[in-house]
Image 1 (cartoon, helix red, strand yellow):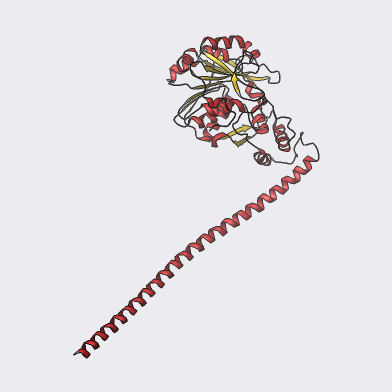
Image 2 (image 1 turned 135 degrees about the vertical axis):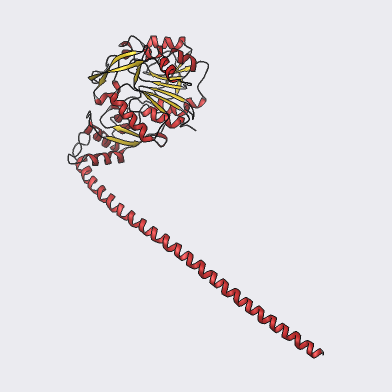
Length: 408
């Protein structure tokens, strides 16, 4: 009996051992099959990825060959040009598309930080090679009403189309900035959801920046009476997809009615005025009958509900525009950035003294940008420049506005 029991136990152990071996073999086969499947999937993915990378690499190589060829061709032109007169003219056999490509590659946008000693044409005579090259491109198109658009990067991810050969492109394309101290201040003042009025918007440098800063929840009123500049402004707004900007085709003044807008030649398109053209070189080439409006009547008509910051550069009509905006200014108490050029103001019945007195009577303090440091400082009674920042006495500027550092 014992021997039989032992024999049965041995048989059971043998069977269990055989079953275990069979199970282990099956597990090994399954694991091998799984590994083969994973290997196949990885191999397929790697092949697809490698193929995509090879195609991308080939495209890069093709582009590199094209760019290298273009660079060599442009370098030949440049070497020839630099051996002659680099500040006078470009090689005559460059096509317009080539000039625009050259201009785009030469362009450099200065960051939104204050610029000590900046003034109009500050970098026109800069001897640096890139400035000389940009100056030559600008001179090529100087004053040409048919000059092409040059689309450049503007601030906060926007685009700005400039017309080569006029004063605006002279500052932004050649010098890399325009009104850098005012724009740096605006960058610190405007927040999402705010409201901004751009009086004398021209082609939209201020408007485009402000629209980006206040976002779609904000409100921008862009006032530009000149049909020529307004077309360019509207294209820049469309190019950036802004839907929260309202363009008003009027001139701000102290009454509602009609007036003749003196349109300056294209090179000095920023000198359009309902008064008299002050600068001899910005001679008038035509006149447009335009609508003039008080800001107060526009605000009533369109239901303006807030106004945080105003920029006003309207060639001598600033005093008249302030008088026509009295109710809005008293209601909304905006910060006002404006030009106070005495000769232009006098052409429209105003003066620097009258304008400053009016603002003082309406509860405003004055700040100016120090020429040497570009730091915003309270006016000491001797406003030397033509630009002024007027601030309601009851709403002091934030500390950030006085910093030379970029916006946090």
